[in-house]
Amino acid sequence: MIERYTRPEMGHLWSIQNEWQTILNVEIAACEAMAELGEIPAAAVENIKAKAKFDVARINEIEKTTDHDIIAFLTNLEENIGEDSKYIHKGLTSSDVKDTAYCVMMRDAAAIILDDLQEFRTVLRRRANEFRHTPCIGRTHGIHAEPMTFGLKLLLWSAEIERDIERLTHAKKIVSVGKLSGAVGTYSNINPRIEELTCKKLGLTPVRLATQVIQRDRHAEFVTTLAIIASTLEKIATEIRNLQRTDIREAEEFFKAGQKGSSAMPHKRNPINCERVSGMARLVRGNAVAAMEDITLWHERDISHSSVERVILPDSTINVDYCLHKLTGIVDKLLVYPDAMLHNMNRTGGLIYSQRILTALVNKGILRQTAYVWVQRNAMKRWLDKEDFRTNVEKDADISAHLTKEEIDACFDYQYFLRNVDDIFARFDL
Image (cartoon, rainbow, N blue to C red):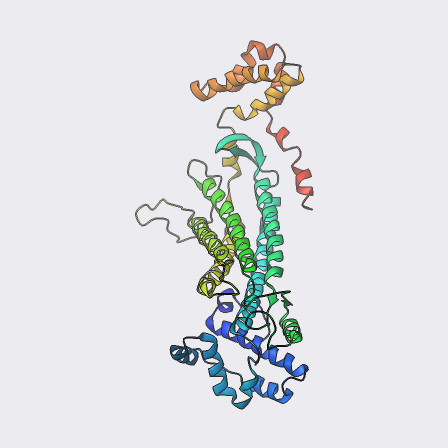
């Protein structure tokens, strides 16, 4: 009998049992459509729905002889249904039911991941608000740049997740299609209305044109979208890993009681879960390449894509689903150290305020390049000789000739850099 979608777990969705059940759902929906058009008896459809059962072990046993999985499946159905089984797969080819079933499964997988993304965005936004005004140093090229807030870092991640939601929503639409048009897509042995009715029953849109298969640019868009999502997750995980480095330690993964970081060194607290996310993202990106390779098939179809999709579709969706759950938990329990952020922000002895001095001099009418030379020479003394930047700026004859001590003091206030933070948050209704 046909089973309706009830949001399964991702692993179950791609199980062999569910795959065959989804293919059976397609076959039964097609029989119902044929009966509605008067092409097969309605009573036969009821009998099919009552008796249509399959056994994976039996399918595998038959396939040893047929070397064709769909024929083995249909043979097993025939064993259970009897005479009315002749109406199953009428006018169809294997790809009609398998391609359509795979689209159902991709659509359902996308629905699960979209739920995951929404949950992750909620956690990111909550924690972004929590640290909205928590100052930290912004880094470019890994080097201290200017002050920002840790909340802005989290808010940036949530904005990217929002774009991932948009991307996956579109990719879900692209793969939510079906095809029941026969051996080379010409409807030679099936009424196009059957495709239309069957797809409607399954919540799909009929493709406008197919060969024997639904074209694989759709699948490639789906998997590459997953790869972009995985790359977003790796970006976040990598930043957390960097912030957990001993010489930075502004944030770190939650370390529960009883947890061990190393078999040799009892002191270790390692970002193992973020490292796991980073590694798994590489797999999804590799799968995206394989999905794009599948776009090119011989003539109206070959089977080179099939073996690839049996691996990359379940692996990519399960991977992204897992990583989203994992990273959501990491961010939810992320240990954040504002005191360390403030300490690190002050480690360069005021160098992070160099642009404020530069701008103040420009505002006094000094040529920018001239002012740049004045400020830089004092900054280099800090880098190379450990001299105090602020003291040297105050002693610099060129600078002090144009800026009072009070004006210089005003340049060394990190709050100046944060004055527009609330305006940025307002763009996100936070």
